[in-house]
Image 1 (cartoon, rainbow, N blue to C red):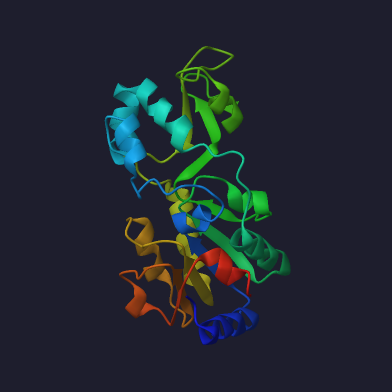
Image 2 (image 1 turned 90 degrees about the vertical axis):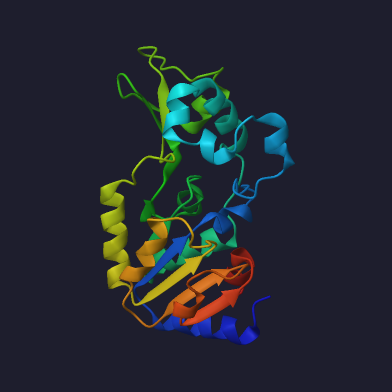
Length: 241
């Protein structure tokens, strides 16, 4: 549970800062009802013959596309979820000119749904899908409602989600933009991530300021580096700011 003093310090720092960057992970979305597929439950073992990390790999996508999509539609497309207090507060700060960018490991588009404009999506987005033959664009609803492997309605080619699968590299422009935002930030808030997935987790090394805030339910490997550690659910904490 977050301490009142920690919340007060966080609030004060936000008020004093004009170049805030937020870097978030799965914990930002779980409060909206998006499950974190790393917390593997019995469901996967009952329904799928492979662990999530295997299914969401480039190799698996190529070799067993139908099985990939069975899992993807079932476990990665949550189109009815709504932004929570964290998403909404970040969008509000951006509107005020305090927050310069959101950098996210999430692929659900909830930051944009909340009104955030400058969002660096390190792992892509379920809302962008392209035909591998002709490049035609399709939204997430088209994928969700398709039978089996989604096919292009123009040329019949297979459609691939614009998400970074295991074994695939991150988009270099997105990475460079993220590094630039973090390097220039006067305050960096890291929330809802265990900081265990690289290269994304290494981004915080580019921060040179003295207001590094880590907000997470559990300890992270970087807690010692932080200027402030706030323990708790990020939506609950942001609703107090």
